[in-house]
Image 1: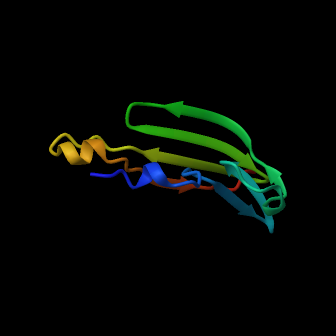
Image 2: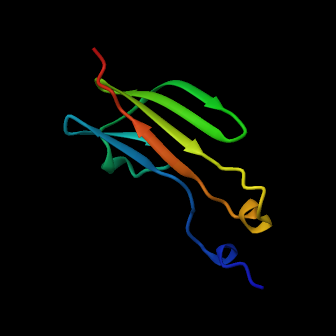
Length: 94
């Protein structure tokens, strides 16, 4: 069986941009500089075995992003398959 991902030449990864009040902020990843106006200010990062929670301030907004990596013990295939779910919240500050 041939690995399909092993022969890809492009980078596989997350890039996250946040748009607040018509300004685009780079949140995560390697993003071309002409796509955003500024970067976020990280306020906290928490890592557990099943989730990674990242909080940052983008202008007047607090942006919380959670990556959930489920542990599926009923299936060996699901244990080997990389899967991530995301959840986001962005309350206005002040």
